[in-house]
Amino acid sequence: MLSFKPYAATLLLGAIVATFATVGVAQVRVENAWVRSTVPAQKATGAFMRIVAPTDASLVAAASPAAANVEIHESSMQDGMMRMRAVQRVPLRARQPFDLKPGGHHVMLMGLKGPLNAGEQVPITLTFEDAKGTRSTVEVSAAVRPLTSMPDKHGH
Image (cartoon, rainbow, N blue to C red; front, side, top):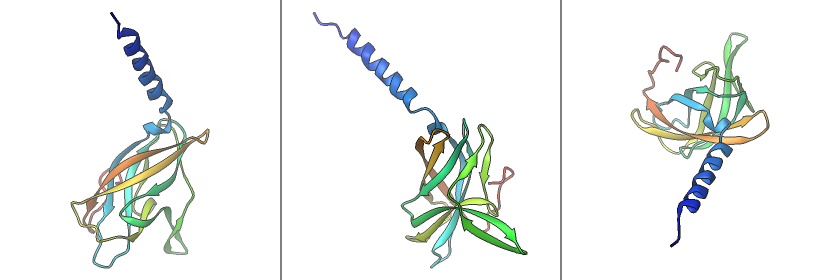
């Protein structure tokens, strides 16, 4: 009579090893993700959220099927005007919440493939890199909020 116990134990051990092999920046938490809705013919909008990484890491890329091009941007006041520029990475300190918010760092969705209406969801893939250069992704479903949306009490 064959026993499946050794086989089951091997499978369980393999699953445990696979789980720990994917630990790292893969455990980055993304909270309260939202996108500002658009008006007809608008081709760009911003996405905002709170990110908490378990270790020092960086947000290095973003993508979405809703847009032809997605970049990480930083807004800042220069000579009395708000200016926006693309950045290659956003450093994240271990366990320190970092807010992507209007008027600061955010994800810019450009070349929108259609209007984004309040109540819809926009999929966004965020790519993170840890201090060793290991990359991982987090899939986010961002709620589309009305144009008049203001950040909540946490800056989202």
